[in-house]
Amino acid sequence: MQLNTTIDDLLNEWGAWSQAGLGLTLNSPAQTGWSSLDDDTGLLIDRAVAMLGMYAPKTKTVVMLSYRSQLSCRQIAKRLDIGETQTKKLLFSGAAWLEGHLIAKGILIKSAA
Image 1 (cartoon, rainbow, N blue to C red):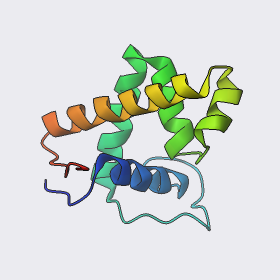
Image 2: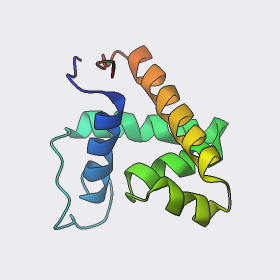
Image 3: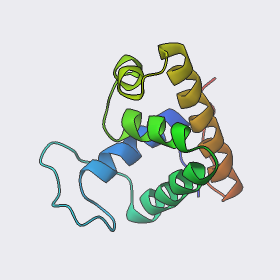
Image 4: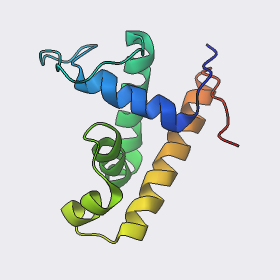
């Protein structure tokens, strides 16, 4: 599957997809969130994030708070009682891990540079 997007754009779309109650969630769709992400890709990202949580639970939490809850690094740092720099490192490493995992699954993601 070829996507003309960066990992950050893809995770932002996944966050909107997840907030909209699409896929297998039991929530009613949110009125404000809408995503052009298809369910297959959304569920693939959901599984990848769940797998990330098995190896790095705090990184998964930071990724979910950033992309699903739309919190800033400062807000996440306060919530988790860690430094903002550490939060940014966790977010960057989580996005990099997810990008590698999705590329290994056959999703081609455009590089940011």
